[in-house]
Amino acid sequence: MSDRSHVLLVVVDVQERMMPAIADHETVLSNILKLIEGCHVLGIPMLVTEQYPKGLGQTVLQAREAMGEWYTPIEKMSFSACGEFEFMNRVETSGRGTIILCGVEAHICVSQTAHDLRNLGYTVEVTADAVGSRTEVNYRIAIDRMARHGIGITSVETVLFELMDSADIPEFKAVQAIVK
Image (cartoon, rainbow, N blue to C red; front, side, top):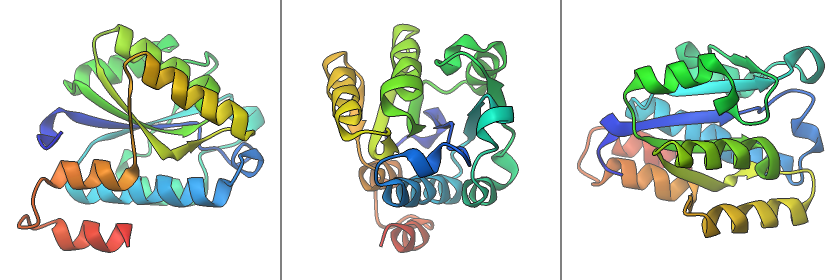
């Protein structure tokens, strides 16, 4: 994954009214923020989705701030982001073939998006420490099911270090400071 020109980060439904309901939500959000910040330093483009924002609110403030200019949310009603024309249009026009996923809920929107992207021919990596569900059992089932269906399961730190490939790149110290 060291060729950053092929990678796109997708932040799924990290919304104000949803995050407090997620098991261990503080850790999940902390890891999502690390991933966003690290990808920002490394120049990885980002997409963000919001499931029914009228009811679930916007993306949490910390994530909106971390995304900066990349915060241009795609509103969705379908559980899979792939069910939204705007999302698929942005993915396709990005020219990126590897999609890193983070967000909530692991067993619904993240899982359905991951499966659909994989079925469309994309390489999909789900950051297990930056996704969550309301219950631990649903989280575990989702991670296991995605892995069994050929979706890569990884961690925030693994992804960021794979994207750097070497400690002698200019961004190394900044990314290292984010993950510490």
